Length: 249
Figure 1: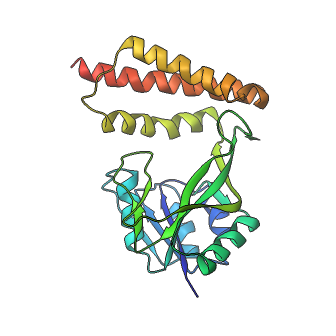
Figure 2: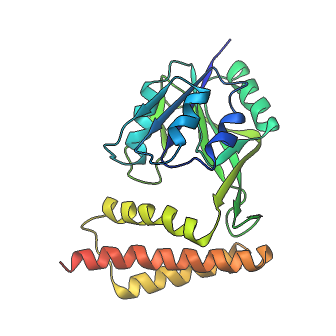
């Protein structure tokens, strides 16, 4: 029988972590949680579910932190999940079937995300296929500071799993600001030295809004679709302006 372990990197996730771990604890063989300096009850919650809880506060990016977590796993397969995600029963069944019947592959989950209390079915958010299940000995995350990806040392196929991975993205505008600030800085850090300009920032921001709200039919998500497109445009403008201002120093 193949074994599967859950990989989590966390920081200040006390409001979401328990629901995530409840969706894992009955069927995974190991849960590894790497914390990067929580100041709330995240560690206390984590220790109720697993003894494999570690602190690594020397933050070098999302990719590196996930690599650290994977090094603690001993299972045949890795299932990477975030604290604000929950595995549905159908996805669980699909994962267990995949690890017992399939040749090595990178398996994608379809995330169904919620923002500000509403599930988002358009706006470019759904479908949202992302590799989360992979063989531990031949695949791992790359070194990216943000938007890290799973890479494999062998040429293996990508396949899709059934069922949703439920993703509770943003609870409020305050939560959105807290969550995106670190991503925006990491994005600019990763591109330090590259050129940008005011016109490029405006163009990318407009294109982002138009793509989400019109091309990706964000208007069908109602007011939430407009809000998300506007916020995404603002974040895009921020990223390119930050890069431009750094180049002016």
